[in-house]
Length: 335
Image (cartoon, rainbow, N blue to C red; front, side, top):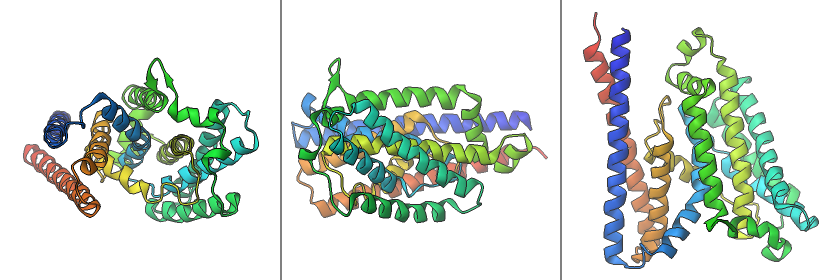
């Protein structure tokens, strides 16, 4: 049985690598085609803008990957982002001399609190993730409108130091890109080289077996939603700094884009599998589509349809791959 499990694990890893190579190949082919249609696509300036615009999406995709791996979903991240961003914007508006680092910590803390509450409802309360996150989405949106009084915070109400979080750079690298890289490096180590990181995969692969082996299932579930909340809070500050605007409907529906990036990156929506390298490619592909389709004069209506078609194809391919893995494991099983 151990040998069979090892063979199945190797097969899954090989398929994952093949899928990532295929996705990378598709990105390269798509980039060449777009460059052929519009020569300004692969310029350094446009590439830098595209990566910068994708940074926030890629940060959120990390947290969503962990949630999906545990067979969960989080529909509240857009609302959490809006709430933390609004509170940070109102705070720096009232205290213009506040350090940008403190503003980032404040937004992250708001997100962490939101994630802790949500994680407790799901892990301790036994509420289905889709129901719990949907309910909290409306609560967080309501809180955002309450703390802002229904108003929005504009650029002239924010100090330059706060707006510089997103526009500034370090060693020639935009701050958003730098923060995203640091987060990816940290979470790559976390999920691949720590006991807790491996337990997250174990819980998603087989919750019952994880419990029998002594893994605290509720603790892991609580942890991943707390991480997702913290990253959403951080993204809220970065979003408001980047667009120099905080509104009650900020990032409305953005959670679907984040989920799409994970699905395109090969994260199994049924839980148990997903890789950092995959969600990077998924985020990049969405960034390319958002940037390139307007460049080649594709109608906004067609843009939505094209993105939806690509996501649907990815979901179908993931389902076929999973079916193939299960069938292969069944054929190899020895009675």
